[in-house]
Length: 55
Image (tube, rainbow, N blue to C red; front, side, top):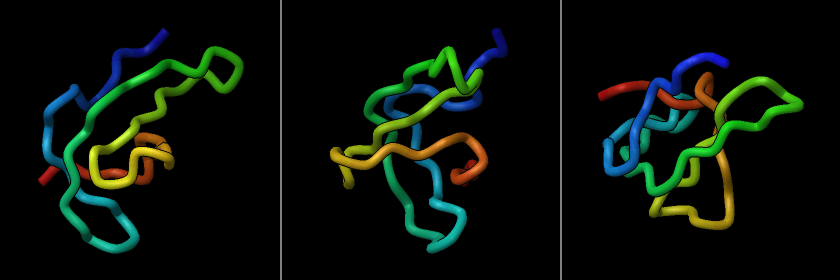
């Protein structure tokens, strides 16, 4: 299992829109072998690491 790139409370940008968001939760999706992140601004949507960038 790899280590997640982002942590809860960290501010990141959504790659496609450039919008700044704050990560609220991180969860490892075992069958996909990657992390998914829920952000405060869009609690019903999740993003994968490749969809987010560090500020």
